[in-house]
Amino acid sequence: MKPTARVLNRIYRTIVRIILGLNYDFCVWKEEPLPEGPKIFCSNHFSSSDVHFVTTLTHDNLHMVIGRAYDIPIVRSFLSWTEQIRALTPEEKKQVVPLAVSYLAQGDSVYIFPEGKLNTQGTLGRFHFGVARMYLSNPVPVIPIGLVAPRRRVRYKFSFAAGRDMTVVSKNYYANIGREMEFPQALEMAKTDKTKAEQMICAALEAEVTRLVDDIKNTKFWS
Image 1 (tube, rainbow, N blue to C red):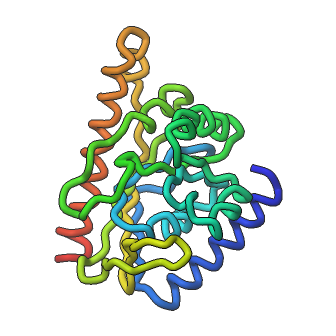
Image 2 (cartoon, rainbow, N blue to C red):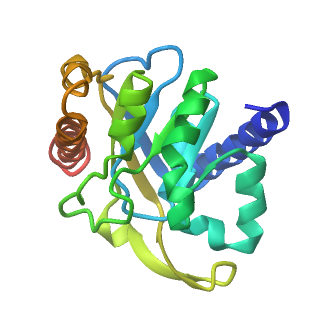
């Protein structure tokens, strides 16, 4: 990550941490300390607030795969300055994996929401293969994360900057960070059947993120 992007990222995370500390009941659980070095973070995605709040979960140089926020003029420039990964148009989406892999090779980390769109906190959407393709191209630890907010705190709010309703969270937000995952069997399988290897990785990650979400609901917060 370039020095300017690194500084802007740190300033932004500091601001988000202050906002969370002053206005939110923000709880984070970790099943184990995060490993050193580049990582792929992946989680469920139920609100536009996610892309801001999850930046505080790590101190790594972080490049997040972002779609619709890039169509907001006031936001677009900042995302580019901080070296986030643009995934708005079909052509840009084709470049997500190569760009993410290049950042991992530099020693930075990547964050991706494999569902590709917001869910309703009921069941997760199907995980797309991008996260698996990143791993198969550069096998670094994958960190699954479950995100939850009480439904009464999730609401639609019109954004004048975006020109549309956005799903935002107020007051309460919770993140459950799981153990690092690696997939040696999938790496071996990819030599003969890459699609099956991608399916294996995504199925394992989807199951683990679901477990982490349910863990918050049943044993951490909602109990």
